[in-house]
Length: 230
Image 1 (spheres, rainbow, N blue to C red):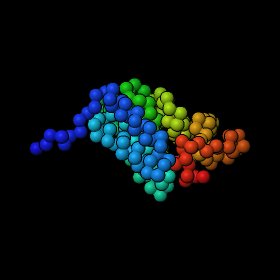
Image 2: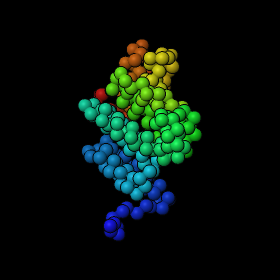
Image 3: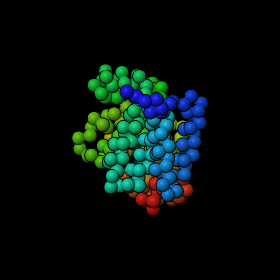
Image 4: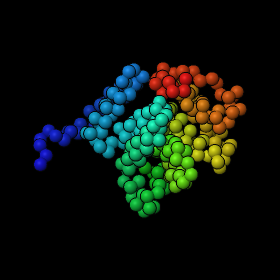
């Protein structure tokens, strides 16, 4: 039997949106000691009120990507965590769940493009899926098919989320279309020059870009994520 008060009460829509904005302020301070933990707690508390909130789930997927950057030893684990958050975000659209059922659990580009969820869901899902496929190596072909479908979604509004989308597209294209891969990886670096990961990825794949891309300038907003590669 459930006792009164044991289940978190869902906030009204306007109050919930304000609470998400407050959690975003905590996220912006993640570079301080314990800041990333605090932001994850804030988003997780909101998820307790609205378990299927796409706006919270993509933010948790973003936090998992930050964890992946600063905790290389457990990168695959964080990519799995982020992928699950991002795919749950997508599944908030009934068209996605119905499409998965029809296609034997595989994603369909047309369904992804039509999904009524924030485009950050698909962008971050693609980045996590591509990162995880790279970590796993051979045998990830089906995962990469899902990534290709995810990359047909509209571009997110956020610059860094857009950069993750372009990084995923460029990394996915490395074995099939070198010209497209180079362009996408370069774009990711130019979109978010303050996050060193993108420039390093572009130069690692195409060393000549080292003389083309501007030197990365540390952005205080990404100081936490840059610690691993500074």
